[in-house]
Length: 588
Image (cartoon, rainbow, N blue to C red; front, side):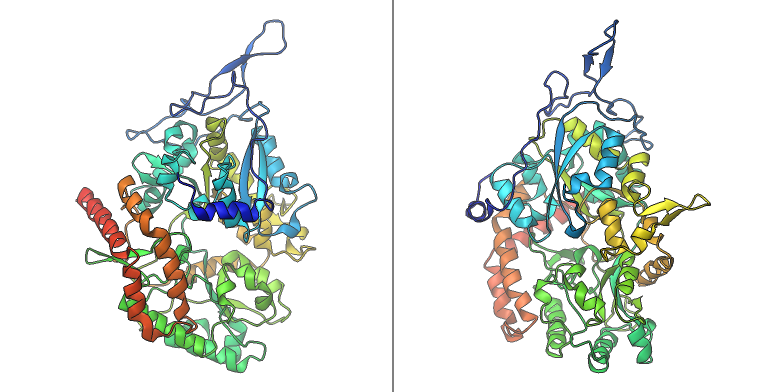
């Protein structure tokens, strides 16, 4: 893969700031499974160092050849590991993000309870290399330019400059499918319900024989994140969340907050992506407003024709509304700096905002940390243009979350690394990572029921329970594994979280315009798109988003579209149309 000028500059600029991820130790070549395209069986034995009979013992308890498969070659049941997975002393590096650095001990994340519990259960030594969210993309650019990726890289699908197919072809990452014998639990979770949950299957299997990453999963699909509003403010104004149905209703609510709540000057801290692709909210204009900083799209299909967002009259109509709301002072002027809810947490807890994105597990955290004793956050439904409207886009529920982990092609023991990743999807492993070790954020009560600890309920550092779960348990926004959503309900009062999720699910959606997850690009198509992708992504970010605050007037919309066409946009649309047509033909 060519190292672009931007990556070289990134090296020069931040090389002194970030550490690399070189291997901490090398496994013994006589006992470690090979990393060739034909994986080893993992059954390599070594002689016992002691004992009169020199009995053979294995360094590894890998799953290859130990589970049943169906006619398609997929596992038929979850696989229970014999622990530990290894008794070797090799070390793997794991690159990730920490959102709550104030919780890090002096010895770093590796010294926290969850990594220690994983190490004790699996015998696998994993050295976590944690960076801040703000530094993630720059640090990744440095590691990529130096060809020094960690053994396991979280979130690489969103920060790698090319498609995962190209990254695998360029030998930055492995094709996990080549090592499917070492991840029976992951393959099982993706495939056992594939007829009903086709979105999960089509997302993970980028083709029939290509898997680029281990994804975060939940035990069940559902809506865990969306918009909430200050219910106590609505009550003061004689309203309830049931009254907020249309965009006009939403506008009136925000204006009422702005004019009647003394502390609230700008009620909506909109994200810098406008919408968030993983739980699209603002799709009533029959487009997907979410703006990506790393990839082209999103796209959708109407009557067999592929469309991209940010370019149609529907997008102009949506942006016209957003621009008018900005002029009305309803959107926080600092919106361009907000990429997650923690970026404006101080404004939320100081009653300066009244409408924001939350994960259901965050609701009670924000309430507990807000000075106003009357604070109450309530769920708001996706707004429609008119009552009774059916949504056609953005509502596919999936067990998949945002977290992904890809494995470096330079990892010295790929079968063991894949097995360790798969352990997090096993019955035992998923329980450990979901909850973390007993006694930290949870404990058993007298009835043998898990309950939150006092440390978690009243954290001395003021960290909310949701973030404690993602520090002392696994972080579903970043890492991989299966999460048990019931952990969100441990804190007293959190029982209402189920009601919030159910409230968000009350919308009329037919998925008529959704681009099918199974319509993927082949290598030639990916190469064609990559020729234009960077220019298109940059152009949209610099121009489409400028319409929000009027720094680019809407009178220039047509010239904006003309400029986009000059950056290879029609060629990219044609590629995705071809991929869609091919997929539809195969499904006929």
